[in-house]
Every structure is written in structure tokens, then in C-alpha cells.
Length: 333
Ligand code: 13P
Image (cartoon, rainbow, N blue to C red; front, side):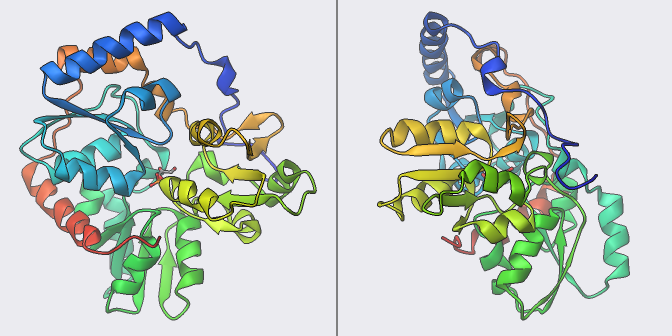
């Protein structure tokens, strides 16, 4: 794909969503909260979920925060409003709980970019290397890895290892960001990427910045290197909220990540301007998988107990070892 191109981006403006009307949102939200109480369920939602789904959740967060919450919550059922690998991680960490994903097609193309077979092949090519795998991966791939990481702790995870030779999978942009922070280690990086972030170029960010040097740029580490180089802050989705607080004098921010998070920032700081970095002309960064879950899907999930996540016990045990090892490492920020 040529630079400045748009392959992999989904050209849908958020306004184009067939949103349920306000009265319907209130009715469904009240019903969902009642059902969650009756069914002893906790609702976890990722920062990229639709605003009305975030509103009804007990906890909203990034991949790392939600993994920790999944491990600590008391309820017998977890309704995971996110994508498949996130719900799967919740199940791996909580085998005794019922974990529901409200839409079975809510996958992740980055997670799909590495299979157990391709990882095995790669490990054979690099014997003796320690495998660090981003949580955006399947349970089988996690089970074949030494340790997991998220965007919130990847640098700390790599630094924590008492080895200098690392295979980093599957996100090449996050891998490069880590390699920049930890130059003393040799890091071989797999060639996967998140199409939602990878579409963005430095030129798009400059355009979003509108030649205002006072504008603060906050980028997710799944963005390409040219975007990362321009950023004042590089952090996980939840890390972005704290990043905004670190610049109390700033009036305008360009946010290089998915639009739903930016929607929440706008509501939290009505006195500031937040611009979603634009991947192509008039196209804000959008994750189609995250947006498969709406209030009707959450209601159905609670009513019918769908879709239950299952992980074979031998795979779960291996994946759990990699996740637990990660959870022992502190956040980068
Ligand atoms: P966070 O862990 O930063 O929330 O990122 C998850 C993700 O999949 C971003 O595309």
C-alpha cells in the first residue's frame, strides 16, 4: 500500500451509525442494569465501545485495566463489551466464571494475523529468544508465548525480562515503539498491525493539527513510527485520560486513536477541543469490530446467556501463565 493510502481503513463516519433513539437508550439501559443485578453479572466495556454501552458498564477501561478488573470482580458472570481476545483473556483468568461476549463476530484482525503455526515456525527460526506477545492474540498463541503485554505495560514487560533477545508479536508498531525505549535489547518484531491505527500517517496528523504548534498530540503505540515521532504523549487508551491531565494549559489536543474514546474526552473536558486524527479525508479512526456491540446485543447477552466463551483447559493453563506473568509487572504509566 502506498503512503497516504487508505487500505484497511473503514470509511464510516460515526454519525452514520443507526443509533437507537434517546428514549430507547434510556429504556434499554434501565432494563440492562436490572438484568445485570438479577443475573449476578458485571459489565466490562473497552474504551472504544459505543458511548451508550460505556454508560451502562460497571467498569470502562483499557485491555490491561479490564484484565485486572476481570480477575477481581465478585460476580459469577462477566459480560465483556469489547472484542473476542479480551473476553477470552477474562475467561482464561477466571475459569470458574461465565464470560459472555455480546456479539460473536466482534474479533480483531491484528489478533488473527498470528496463528499458533506461524508462531511455532518463528520460534524455530529464533531458538533461545523469549516470546513477548501482545494481548491482541488468541489463547493458543498466548499459550505458546513466554509472557504477554498490553499497550500499557509493553516497555516495562520487556525491561523486566532477564534476557536480551526477544521476539515481539504480533504488532510491529508497538514492537518498534518498545524497541526505541529499550535499545539495549535485541527485539525481533513480527509483521502484524492494527488496520484502524496503521492507516494513519504523519501527514494526516499534521493536517489535523492545523499548523498550531501549541496543540498536544497523543498517540496510541499501535500507530506508525512517523505518527509516534510527532506525538507529545504515547500511551494506552486509558493512559490518554491521564495524559490530557498532564497538560492543563493546553486547549487543543489531536488524539490518534479510535473515535469513541475521544467522544468521552470531549464530555469530560467541555472547555477543551479534541480532534480525532483523521486517517483519510473526512474519515476518523474507527474499529468496526468494537462497534458490533450495541445495547440490544448486551440485553440479549444477559437474557439468553450468549455468547459464552470457552477455552480448552490445556490451552487455558498455558495462556494463563503468560497473562499472570504479565500482571505481575507494573504499568509503564
Ligand atoms: P488498549 O489496551 O490501549 O486499550 O488498546 C487495545 C487495542 O486493541 C487498541 O487498538
